[in-house]
Amino acid sequence: MKRRLSKTKTVKITPEAVAAFEAGDRQTLHHALGLRPWEPNPLEIDGPTSPAWASDGTAWSQAWPDMWTIRQELEAACRCSNAKQKGRNQCF
Image (cartoon, rainbow, N blue to C red; front, side, top):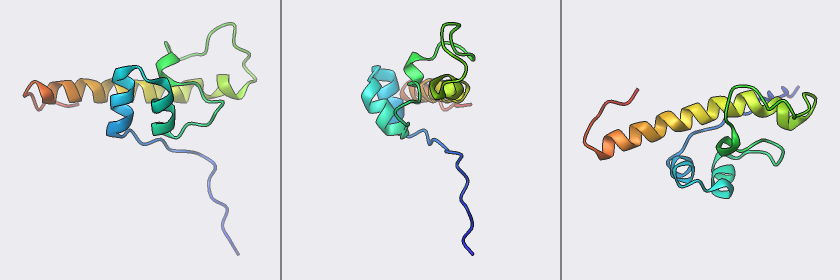
């Protein structure tokens, strides 16, 4: 009997994704993170909840909290990358 795999998707923050985030390259970031077409791009996320105008029932709106988390991880990775470039090894 085959086991059904979980449908939850994990996103890995790669150096390519961090570089695309820092450059503001939406298409490369979307590809680097392996996002689905209906998932909002982390560059477009500006808070933990979707905008008031967005319908709560859409896949785009439902993916918003996950993309907020990914955006925070990307911002932390950027800070870490910048600290390493300046000779500081304090990444947290």
